[in-house]
Every structure is written in C-alpha cells, then in structure tokens.
Length: 357
Image (cartoon, rainbow, N blue to C red; front, side):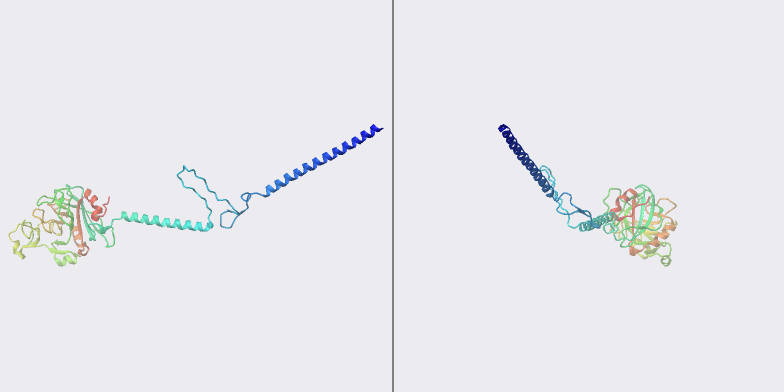
C-alpha cells in the first residue's frame, strides 16, 4: 500500500514536470517566431526610395521619376583618356528643347553663311581683275597661235555686276595669215612667246583699248546709225604712217592737213577693197610706240570670207557695222585677242567671261 502511494506521487511529480517543460518550450518558440516576423516586417517597411517609385506623366513633358533619384556617376578607369562623366538631369526639359532649337537654327544660319561665302568665292570679283573698268568687251579667240581662223563675241555688263552677258551670238572672223603674236596693249605681257613685229603677217594678241572707229560713211550718217565712238571718215587722203623714227609713227591722218606727213612711208586707208568700209583701231603700239613693233592693225572687214589678213582682224561687213555702232566710249570697251588655251588661263586674272562649248 505504501509502495503504491509512493509510485502514485512520483507519477504526479513527473507529469507536472513534463507539462511545465513542454509549455515553456512552446512559448519560447512562439516568441522567437513573432520576433523574426516583426523583424521581417520592419525590414520590408524600411525599403530604399529607389525601388517601386511611382511615375507621374505630365502633359507635354517626358516621363520623370518622382522622389529622390540617385545621380549616376560612371567610374572611369585612371588608365582611360576620357574625362569623368557626370549625368545630371536638367531642371526644366522644355528649356532644354527650346535651347536645342535655337542652337540648331544658329548652326543652320552659320552653315548657310559659310555656304554663301563659298559661293561668293566661286564668283569672279571684277574689281580685282584687269578688266575692272570696262563694261563692254570684244573677244577674239583662235584655236592656236598659228591658226588664222577665229570666233568673235561682244559682251557687256553693269557696273555692279561681276558677270559678262553675251550680246547676241558669236560670229566667225579671221586674223593674220601667220596667226598671233603678243602685242603691246593695256597689259604688260611677261608670258613666253613671239612678239608682234612689223610685216610678220601676225595679228597682235593681248588686251587693247578700243577708242576710235572709222569707215567710208560720212560722220553725220555714222552718228545717225548709232556710232558713238570717236569716228573718222576715210577719204583718199587718209593714211597710216609706218615710218619708224618719226613722231607720227603708227598714226592715222590726212596728208593734205599735215605737212609733216609728206614724204613719210605710209599705207593708204582708202582701198579699192571693202576692208575699211567699217573698222575699229586696235590700240596696239600706240602709247610710247616702239619702232618695228607693228603698225596699222584694225578690226575691219575681211578681204574675203574666212580669208586671212596681213595682220588685222577681219569679219563680214554686216557684223562690223553692228559692232562699230554697238560700242559706247562711256563703257570703256576693250578688245581681248588670245588663243583658246591662253584665254582659259587668263579668265580669273583678266576678268574674262567663260568660253561656251
């Protein structure tokens, strides 16, 4: 009986101890779980502002993140030659767009200005050329130095215009039977090549003034036809002096009106042919004339269709009459006579119009 009581007591004690033990362990586990859950919740609530940031779309403006957005600063290796780059977001995107538009317009204007300058450089500035004072120009162009065939063209321009305008179409002409040689005109010639000599059968090449005209027509009738140049009517007494060593060398005059011309070697301007029906005096070797450099060369009527001359420049009578009447002394007409290859070389420096095809 006593043994049973003791066993019973022992069982109660063991049962009490077990209940106390298991109850305390459950409470500790629950507390730990709650602590961990609380810590997790706290961690979730402590999220950095860069995550899940709401985006607000403003009308007419680009999408912009709200809140604090970290500035991205790429790291560049010290070995790199590039500088550090900092990306900074602008305060007002509309200002940037307007500024970009202004810069684009400015760049376009600058490019346009540069284009205009480039184009201007391609346009010949007549003020820097040898023909800057002339507003009328006659060109005579041969294929080569030795050819007697040529093409003649009349050009004109306005004082503020850098470009020559062709007056009508070009027409055929002829030069001396032996072609061309450099003459003594308004331009000092330093180019290589033959120089014009008396009796060489060559026409003078270069640039020359055209100041005087002549013809078989009376002065009054010539003026009625529109001739404005200083005009001389050719009579049987009109001669061109080619006697070297005299003050009258290379001058045209009437021998009846000048006793000093009597007995001097000369050639008659009143010919049986039609060559001097209309003509222009080429101012070759007329200023400070050099003996033997050539005298009495004109632009006049050819001796026959495409037949060479003795040294003048010839064309048909119809074109010669029109040419003489078209020239205006106020426009300081000039005559340029050159072979085509040389003409091409002189375009920029002399101020010549480009040749057509």
